[in-house]
Structures are given as C-alpha cells and as structure tokens.
Image (cartoon, each protein chain N blue to C red):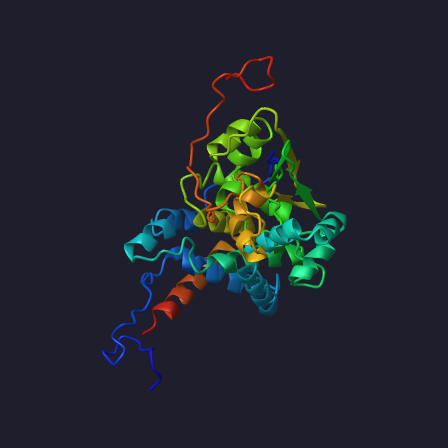
Length: 248
Length: 117
C-alpha cells in the first residue's frame, strides 16, 4: 500500500480527507452535457475539438501575463521586444497565441498590444462591444468584465468606476481607456512600484495581478491578490449637462 | 456598447423549468463546503462557445449580443455561470441548432446515466 493516500476506508492514513464535493446533480450540469452531446451529433463541432478547447481553457490564466510584465520590468531588451511585437515576445515566456488551433481561438486574435503606463498616464482595457479579453495571457475574464455595467460606464466615467475598484488616481494622471475590438487585444503594463528594487522576477510577478493588467488596480508590495469591494451601479453624484455625463 | 440582437426573447418552457430549479452553483457550493467559485462544467461551456464559433455555427459576436439581451431580460435574476449557459442554449434553440424536444429527451437520458448506481 502506498503511503500517504487513502480514500476514507479507515485505513492507516487517517490524516487524509477528501476534498468536499457537491453531491447533487443540478439541471444546469445535465443541460450542459445534453446540449453538447446534441451539438456534436448534429455536426456543429467534434468531440475532439471540444476536448482540445477545454484543455486549452483550463491551461490559461493570469500567471502568464504576470510573468510577461515582471520580465519586462527587469529586462529592457525584452520590454522593447514586447512593445515591438507582443505576440512574438509572448513565445519567450512560453505563450503561443496560435494555440490551440494553429491560428488562435475564434475570439483571441493573434494581435496583442501592450500598453505601457507611465507616472502620468494610466491605461485601462475594456471591450464595449462584447467581452474581448487577452485570454492566452490573462485566462478567462472575470465576471464583472463581461457586464454591460463595466463596459458602458468605464468609457464615460473612468475615474468613478476605478474608484469603485478602490483605485483613486490623482487628477494629473491621464486615464486612457483602450477598447478591445475584433482585430486587437490589449494588456496593461503597469509602472513598477517603488520598494521593489532588487526583487527577483518571481517576486515581481506575484504583485502583477490580473486586475493590474486590466488597469483597475496598481501593483504594490504586499498586494498579491485581487480583492475589491463590489458596488452597485450608480450615476455620478455631481454630473451636469455640460460635463458630458448623464444627468438623470 | 452592446449591440442590438435579433434574439427571440420569448420564454422557453424547458429553460424556465431549469431557471426555477434553484440549484445554482452559488447555492450548491456553500451547501457542501466547496470553495471552487465555478462549477466543473464551466470550462466545458466556454469550450463549447469556442467550438461553435470556430465551426461558424454560432459566431462569437452573435452569441455575445444575444447573451447581453437575454441576461438583462429573461435571465436577469440568474447568477453566473448558469446565466451564460441558459443564454447560450436559448440562442441555440432560437436558431434551430438544437430542438427543444430533443434536448428534453437527452437531458432525461443524461440524468439517468449520471444517477446510475
């Protein structure tokens, strides 16, 4: 018997507990399987295609983007290559935008631009049309990124929306919203924060969270997770007909 | 901004029944002490959306515009990711990519398989 692993049979390894599982079968779970099986039977796609995309979906995440940003911070030559041709530079950190089909996915076009922040310029990405997102680098988009609330309001009231994420930028910092489209994906390269001198690439990558690369947060020492308050949508308190913001 | 979709917003009996079941992941996960924020089927759902787009059966923009319409109307009270699933299936049914009767039968068969001892 191998050591250190048993499945609740009261054997030698009493310390091991199986992770909790949902032990009900929901109609949603059944529905997802049923519609997928029918789609395959109707020839809408193949089981092999579905397996390939599922594996790809599970393999991508924001860690890749974090590595890219950290490497760009400490390696000026790499940063220059990122700014020149980000898709090609991604290969240096093991990200191939051509996966999983050989020509990318249907919604992640093989065209990426990295937007470099400066002390006086801050970028934020959005997709006002749907929810385009640089999935090979950042993984699946967060739920809030897909909402019409974020998409609609960010371009009109960026400072207010950023404040709702806990990011209050001084007035002298220009905010530039970059709208993803059917031809290009974007990622924000934030300013390397003070207090990270002599840090390793791995240390730096830990503070470049998903939200930093969207632009709704700033990296800082000690901040390694995206936790922010959730606010309900609201109109600006001090909007006026002359400010270009809605008044109702 | 979200573009207007030509999706039929009429209620679909099968999906209404699922909507009212109340077994969404945000209810089930805490009931069993599961911390994963997403159900296991979510990646499969995302892959299905990609597959439908690659084959041309349901282009991404068409799907997302329909989803925008459906999630702010018919399924506005459903949490994610069930809302995305219901919107996708609603769109597929509306476009005739699958038939409701076939789906009802297949769901019965799938549940029977999953619950087999």
